Length: 290
Length: 321
Image 1: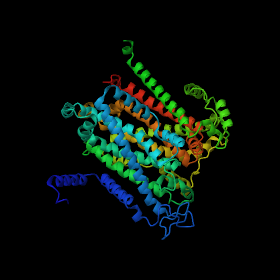
Image 2: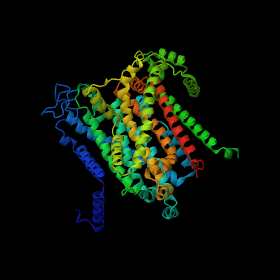
Image 3: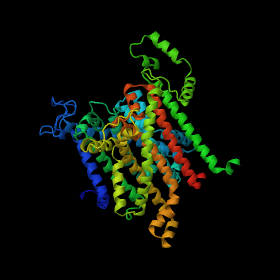
Image 4: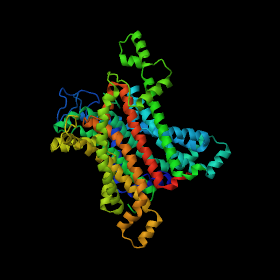
């Protein structure tokens, strides 16, 4: 494929392709679905037949037709278009939240492992306390008081989730921190941040990757659940969880349209979990035995 | 030296102490959440149009002029005796939540009573026939169903059993005046949904717990002795896996808490979760606080039970490195 690239890069690409080819069917399925979602999210404005908040019909809850493939929603907006824009909104918000919490959690975790002592104790106890509350309940309470803006939503979920990254990166970094190359860097007089990013992070990254995928799913589902409950992403932004809620009345009439966004959420989460499961199995060497 | 003589007791006591500590921290957070309200608490109760004098009088009446830790202690003491104050709508919070709390506890207990044995059975089945069709089928389908949002499962169940087949009512609006059979009949769909959600987690965790025991050398020894595989799983692996399984069950019951909120909303079941969402929509802070405190206490309680069980079942945990 990448024949023109330098030999190291091209061998890396072939190694990656061979790895992908050796993946079980579920993981391949997961990768294809994830890529398809990414495509839809990236090119949403080009794919969607109508605008995100454009009222295109006077008939709310209109049935499926050639003009509006999946009918219209409660305000007469095109359901399919909102579904497509929903991919962009739901995925990007979950992605931003995951990245923020990954950054906070890993940096603090590695820092705690490197410095140790009092700082480590204080950080770890705070994390323990944060982990002892049920996520959804805590988020609901804070959002109901601060108001459900997207920034609040992202920050609260990111902070609560970063506790998981903290735990795992601290534990992994503790194993690496006593190795020679870290000692060497310390002896050279490098700062803690430099050591964390350049020496420790690359060595614990494989461990963190599957956690990253798992937490993305978790955050994605949490945001959908919050929007479904009416406290997450607020209208008129198209979001899959709130689309289910707004059109739920149709379900009692036997119309399955409102279930499509829910199915879209489920499919992406399943796809990512399949890939994560494969990575976990590979890491623990269980592939041969299933 | 006295600590060394009863290691399990002191370990359990320290875990209970930690649990109480986190409950206190959580209650502090819940209490101080009021302080984050835009505007003062008193004007939040009286509404936008209150005169400054009325607000001041209300603050006096609520005791808002006292230092915050005195108010916190008063609030916590009252909460411990079941008095959660007045809601913004003017009713005592416990009158709003009390009957709903019973409904939620009934819903969750029925689910737990069914889920625990079934999930342990399925988990054992997966571990016994590891890599065979039943294991692959259950592992893949449970992996899929833990990735599905709860409301999706709920609506699918509702669509199939209530709307298409018309076997059960789609709304679980039970009332105290209904008799037991009728109430139970209306609770079938929420229970079924909760079961589907929680079973997937429990089966996966049970399977993992047994399989991690199965990796130990003494299991290999039993196999080499020629014991049949079923006997190896039931007699050799299971006794050592009971501790991890029990703690996994307790953890999943804690997980039930967030599931219950969504499912109560979908089926309009009059429970604490529904009350909390209603309160969130009306920004009725005292009710939100009470619900959050109840959920957090249950969550911490279940986690504590999980901790204690795993300590008792695995004495090695008594000696942390």
